[in-house]
Every structure is written in C-alpha cells, then in structure tokens.
Length: 224
Image (cartoon, rainbow, N blue to C red; front, side, top):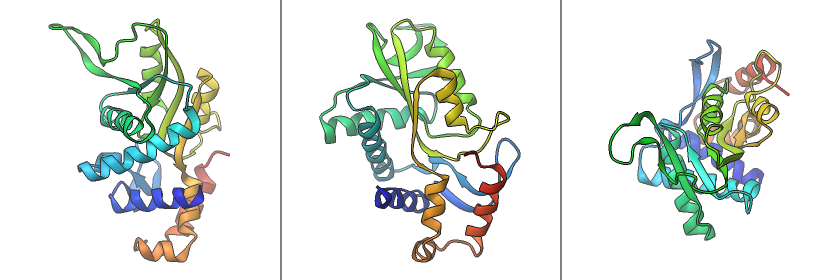
C-alpha cells in the first residue's frame, strides 16, 4: 500500500497537480505545497488518475454503492472516468450522475445529468480535494433533497488534513456531520513520507528545504 501511495504522489508531481514552493490557500494560509487536479488535462493522465480512484473505491466501497456523483465542475470528469475504469478493470457497472450549475429549462430540464435516482440508490461522491468542506456541504444539501439518493461516502484524491475552527480536518468533519465514510487516496502524511525519502526528493527535483517547510506547516495547521 505504501508503494502505491508513493507512486500516486510521484504521479501527482509529474502531472503538475502537486507543486512545492510558496502558495496561498483560499483560506489565506501560506502553504509550501499546492494541489490542483485541474492540471490533469490529457487523456493519459486522466485515465491514470481514474485508475487510482477506481482502486480506492474498490478498497473502501466495493459492493456498497451503485452510483458515483461528480459535483460540477472538477468532479464531472473524475466521476465519469472512474465509472469507466470500474467497468473496464473491475467489471463493476455503476451508474454516474453530475449536476448543472444552473437548471436547464428546456429538453429534459432539471439540475441532474446522467442517472436520475429513479429508485433507492447508494451514492459515493467523487471530488478532487477538500480543504474547508464548503463544496461537499453544498453537494450534501443538494442530494438530501433527492428522495432516492442515499449518500454513503466521499472519495477524494488528497486530504490535506488541515484543522478547521473545530480542530478537526474537513474530511473528519464531513464524516461526523453526515455520518458517511470519507476517504482519500493519499493524505499529507503520505506526502511527507514520500518527501522523507531522499531519492524521491531527487526524483522530483524538490526545492531545497521543502521537507522542513512541510513539517512546519503540518505542525501549525495539521489536524490529528
């Protein structure tokens, strides 16, 4: 499992989705690393990313869910690609659904595209990253209005494990507040473990002193 996590961190860096340096998060925190899955912009990288999502789904949700939900916008390609990989690699034929930002007032109309929850369905939300949990809260509120959509889980690529005002991470807060399983492919501890290996740092041409900066950031803002 550690090898797979190392491979995923390396993959994130190679694709430009994980960068080390000096950045400012939406919450205003200065951070030595930044994650943006919008950098997955080729068929090859999206396909590989979906393999990791599908593998993580099988570990945590195999046999538990029938539908993947991808919140607009980044969740849409992640959701669709993961559904394809689950079918191609694991012979799991799940439905998938995503939302429009604005309701369509012609044709079939409505906010949802894809499977419309015509019967009771267990749902796993597919997201990219989660910092404050705002997007997940919006998604949970929207799905709570759909009678047959039973959200059982959330799957993201990277958990920064940063503490909110309640002292918990966003992922832990989502689990506690909504009573669902919330998992990530890797978290900041896995990224640190990757950086602690000197060969790994050389392999990605990591900035000088980056490990110490990530240590310090984790110490200051990290949740347990």
